[in-house]
Length: 300
Image 1 (spheres, rainbow, N blue to C red):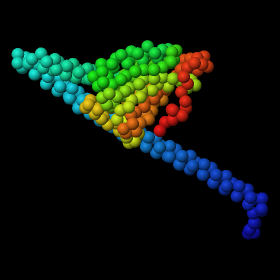
Image 2: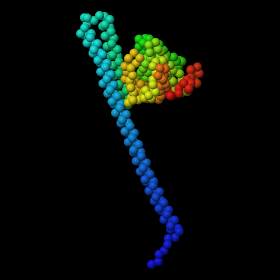
Image 3: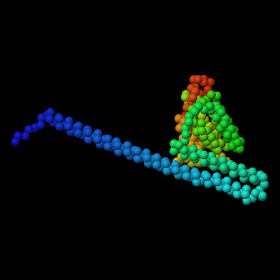
Image 4: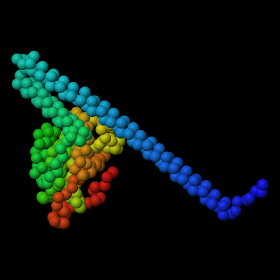
């Protein structure tokens, strides 16, 4: 039987067929590899979220267990002193006990309020109602709210902004942000220090600043200050206690209002917390407004 050799055209056709099969094989396996890589990446992301979730849960329960217990110990302790030694206590001692009870009750309420707000925010259950807010009356309200605390530490607290700065934000969230940032500034400012709340504009954003000349923040703490899993509470300049939860709330609420928040600080040189909010009125409408310099808003 005579063997016939394949022609050149037949060989080329076979080669093309093999190349086509190889390309299809390669594409199929590349898709499988990419699919596996995506699955691995998703697993890693889920693992990271799970670790953060567990750390958050641990932090949450740590706050409840330690801080609530601490506040209630003060309330119960001084209440017992009033009850058991009522006849032996003079008026000055009674006022001191009552003052401690009142202060601890306020701190407990503030802690519970922050915990509930944070829990609602995390679960997506907190109502969000953006509205036009004039900053000047709100700044006055916040500063007046903290005047007694500032007076007790002989801290000068003031606000400055040009009229007609109006932002779009949820009012309750904005009050919570300012309240927590001012509380934090007063906590870490020494006796006879100063805290300044101010606002100006840059393009289509309102730039809100809370500045103090207090103890400042080291680099490691600054890098983790808005992360609940890494956040560590530090005592204030006269031993004030906190949970670190307030700053976590600030970040959550600022971002929900389409803004950004960051901090510029050095140990011993005070702190400057800055956050942005959408501006209602464009700068061109109010040419007399003090426009923030970009150089002063660099995130470190």
